[in-house]
Image (tube, rainbow, N blue to C red):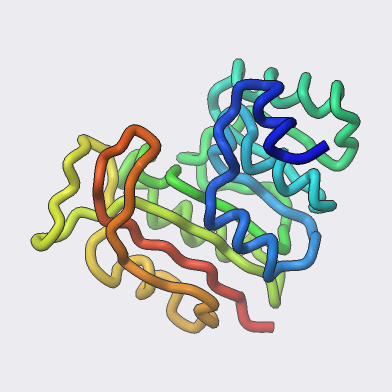
Length: 189
């Protein structure tokens, strides 16, 4: 079954375009989807052979993802209730995906969350982040608790190899235009 059919069956939107692109570059591996919600990205990656753990603090979304995983036979997909603000990932991963999630965190916790993501990424592993920005040129039109400034994400990943990095304008699923920091970075071995 195609992912389009799978997502249509459960009323989900398509996997994030950056996740789709990352799956073309990164071989299936042990993966964490932070802020997975009902699992569109986790399911996309699981369908491509990734061993995925999806975490979100929304217990209803996690239960929905668990049910889908069982119904569709995704044995390598685990869904856990976890508040990302805790910055205390218990396991190590080869790929950590965090798309449009950081901006909903408590701002004072974001630095610790990024440090924890880096610490829990195995050598040679990857972090994929997409986060809204608020800059003088492109003020964020949405009231997110947290946004990145120019160069802030790149600075937080100093010493990593940037496979992709940009701070381009983009469109949210609701049609809002804003600037995003988008990064796929590889941890040194």
